[in-house]
Length: 154
Image (cartoon, rainbow, N blue to C red):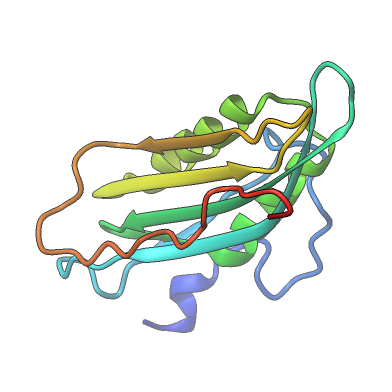
C-alpha cells in the first residue's frame, strides 16, 4: 500500500474535533491488505458513554466489536470519533448498540460482525445487548469477548 491509498482520509493525521452527533460522524474505511484471508478484528471500548433519552443522565457501557473484514477495514481514528459522538447522544442501550453495528455494516460490508454492549446498571439493572450479522464464519478464531457478567460489589 502506498501513501496514495490513504490520501482520501479526512481525519487521520489531522486535528479532528468530536462530532456533534453519531449521524454527523464520518466513518472512514481503508483497503484491507489481507483481503481473501479471513481473520478477526476486535475493538474494545471500555468507557463508552451516551445519554438516557428520558432523564438525560449518562449511561456507561463496555463495548466489544468483532468483525471479519472483506475488502475494507474501518479506520480506527474515525471509529473512535464516531463512538465519542455518542457522549451527547440520547438513546436507549439497544438503539445505541445495534445502531453502531448497523452503521459499521453499512460502511464496511464485512464478512461478519458482532457487537457486545455490556451496559452498567441504572436503577440496579445492568442491560447487555448483543447483535451479530449471522453465523460466524467457519475457520476464524472467535475468542470470548472477555467481559464477565455484572456481579455488583460481591
